[in-house]
Length: 199
Image (cartoon, rainbow, N blue to C red; front, side, top):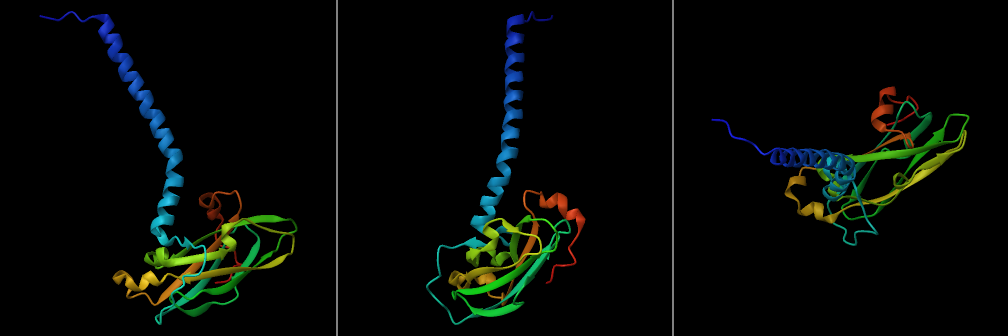
């Protein structure tokens, strides 16, 4: 025996389902926009993927343990710049502030704004690698043919010595890759590496 369903109940149920689905769609859209800044925040807080930290000033405590820091430079193929570290490696005491410099040259006949992405390897050292000043914090504009020296002021956090997972780390590599500013690195990376970059 079939039940008689009230058409108003069916409309109410359909409306509830429709509102729920619309809410779900808008929620998913909101999460997609929030995911990039949330991921970036997560990386900065945890050092995930070799993301370095930003410090207001020197560590204060300097340990006897040393670590070798290597410097790497790459340029996306869509950016006609030369880019290289002035020093390929240095040995620093943990907690000791150190400064190095990178040199960039615009080989084009027009001004270009570049932005550097960065990380360290091994990834697990990212949370302990602190930059006080760095050209990578801001976009860099180079005029045609201009060459600039860009300093990096950094230290390795003394807390690294208390982390047993980093007992085996004696070398940290700091890597930068320059892209044209406002371009998506994922899109322009298809152009390949720039032969003017020096590691």
